[in-house]
Image (cartoon, rainbow, N blue to C red; front, side):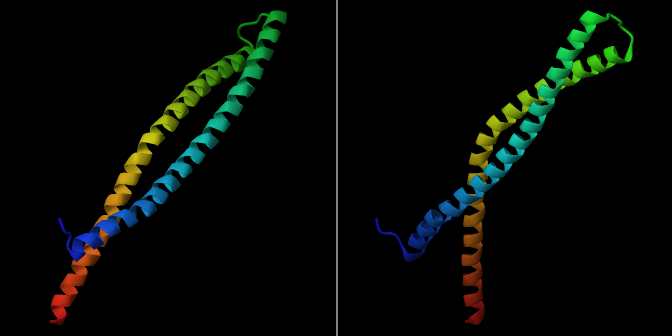
Length: 133
């Protein structure tokens, strides 16, 4: 089986488009992971801060057992925040795992887009050559 000149160029262009597609997908992946890690770090710091608050609340509750003072309300809010940060950290871990799947989607879309652009340039070149004749 012998390939025509156009087919050889198309195969070479496809192979050459794999590297830019990989770089684009990796760039998007790194950006998303960086963003997720920043959010996770903020949530973890808030989670550790509320841990300290809850430890202090337990100590204060042992000393004085008043259920309706300002300290008790702050402790309740701290407990709710602690639970919310736990949920947020779990959601960010799941998002980090999903980001690995999105890498493949970004790679595939980049390959398709680059090859579509190459095909459009090829067809445009053919159209312009017909115009000249």
